[in-house]
Length: 199
Length: 202
Image (cartoon, rainbow over all chains, first blue to last red; front, side, top):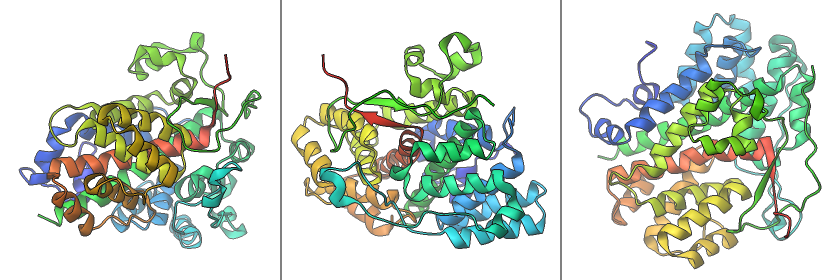
């Protein structure tokens, strides 16, 4: 995909002059800056210690566990384009298969909301995944799963786990933005595709 | 590496959704004001946000923060037709209620109540959750926002049809999608980088 092609437009299938093209044009700043966010996270000016390949791997994982085939396909292609070896890509696919769930779930602080507590899995990368992807990325996938499915369970210890795996404070901010932005982008794509299919 | 997880000061955690003002206590070190470059300051978009530890933390990735903020402002503040501001805030509140973000829900419930003048209905959404009866138009918006908040997405043609029957045109429906989706983004940052607190008394 060309660097300046709008990813949401492409993934929804919005063509120039279509009704959704006109709707997105009415919110042109949101359109422009959703794309700018995507580029800031996947084509950053400065990588820090969060490599392009890792960004694509986390992205493919997040879209995969969302069960959104359109965005997952896009990010899997991006991962392949980043130079990731077949074994590495297969390990990401295996991690998706092991981590998929339905959300949101999680616990509240003890009190009147406790009756709404719901439990679900906490993803832990297995030995094979750790070996194939390394501890730095494995920690990121574990954190991404938490943010995707049960963000209200997030705790200080989860950030400590990232620091222990070599993530800096700044790179944790970028990782958090990447996962949270994709939660947005995937929902916009899903929602607009439904709307496009209901003329 | 000097980076570390912060221990918040002693505080009271909220145990119910509320329209009252809450504080937010960060778990990672924000940039110090005096250490911020021109690029960091510009990324805040609103200069007043330099007072917010949340935005000074996100400013560690200024390109992502600036683009996020400009996306946010257009989705919620663009006055050109579409969904009324009150109902964009309703969608944000519904997403935050379902994800369990007490802080985001408090801010956007206040906005929803202010712009709609339906404070009691907003309170019922906070108390009872996304299945409470708020009248058909609001029910349709809340149901669509909740469906889109689920993972995987449960948003389908039936939600579009219901929103249209409730009087929304396609620009307004796209606004529901963007407002709810944006809180899929915001809730995950707020919930994972810090925690809400009841402000200390006078």
